[in-house]
Image 1: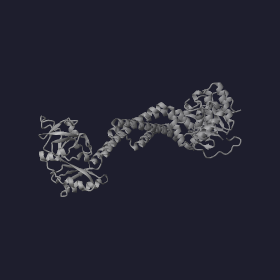
Image 2: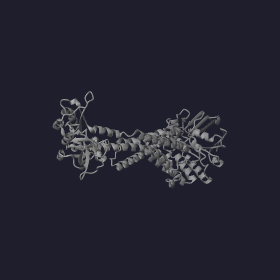
Image 3: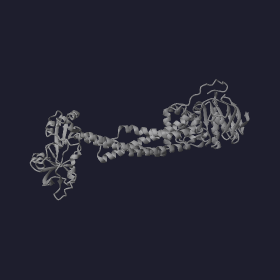
Image 4: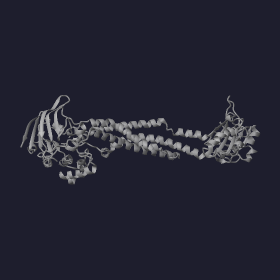
Length: 409
Length: 222
């Protein structure tokens, strides 16, 4: 404190007006605390928008994780060998030596073939019109097919040595449903190519190749005898050693038909399924768009509330200017309030979306997955949206005349 | 010199002249009462002294600094460190306790909150409100609220204190207490400029400036 009498020289430098970041945040939080209900309601808009988006991302990620875990359980080491087509479009034929050759290839665990029985259909009884095949095909198969494909019996047993001599049939899951047979037992029979076949087993669904589900299987000797089927496989399923799937895959064509390797197609069913899983993980754009609209509405709500807030708080703004706040301090205060508000909305939205995903996962018995990036993106996008929504109100607050505080009483 | 105004003109858009060439010198430690009818330009002069508004023309010196050439940011710094305001309407933050309201007065000095609170407690003691520290403005009487506002103005030990009708919302008893408090605090050496309608309050000041129609029409010392 200086006295008039001494009249010492004044410092030529003016002390600067400061507002450290901590104080800015404290001021913003104080502003929000003062108007709790209003803050909560306007944050809710952001929370719903972000919650919707997190839920969309979470649900699709959970569905994807579920499919991937199914694939993992069945193994990604299953390969299929099928006859390709010639240059002119005619079907190639796999040699009857293909299966034993493949079984001896290095890295192959086991192999099973199916042989298409093209001249036979399956009916519940001879009274069913011939045209109503129900889309069910007939294949001859080796007794190790379920083992190789990775499926088990829903009921009964698969073809065995007895089946080689007698008309016995095993139904795929879908075929059993169409034929309205849910369980084997007694003398349950199906009418297959003018002969009654005893149903000895029903397979569970083969996830890796669902075409097997709508098929009825009989033994190869029976098929050869009754339907003149040639022992040329229509498809061979191969289990390769897990760590050498690609190597085995590259050599399979040549092993199956050394004289015409080009006429052999090798594929890996899990690849297609993984692609499908990836597609499932691609959350639908439409739903995401809806979330974005909700978010936009929330942002407008925040901007609206902040504009009203600025008008109501002219006195406070004037006071702060009188206390030494620069225009920039005032605008940062409102910007920070808006951003913190939306940040809290974003965090609440993350919780909301994760909760919705959890409910979905629990009811569908799928794993609960919220992608890691959502944990960061949800609050961060809230913060950014709030800052954007606060730009105009903050600029408006900074432009207000500081004399307001003196005028309003 | 704490405040120096030289031929200061303030015109508002639309051609309204609130000040028509005001010249006034207020040395350090002076205590000045500004009186005059409504619309005479008292408050405009105070806002220009307080650097909340810029003069349309003329020279303004505040706490030894030429205000006309200073930037907005420099003026904010000047207000943050050198000038304390007391308003008729108190302008206390309803959600904050008395001590936090006083601490708010030093927010833009960049001082950390702990330190500001400590100084705020001392300032509240000085205005006789040690026992009301944690009260919210709503729990205080009008006189007490104005004393909190005064504590907020003096806490940073400003060179200049500007008060605009500080007793306007108070009964005469608490108004008298507030004026006595301001005199006592300014006796420490701060310069005090106070606007009032009340002749009796003005009579208690060693210097009285009279205004009418944007001009100074009287400047008495006793």
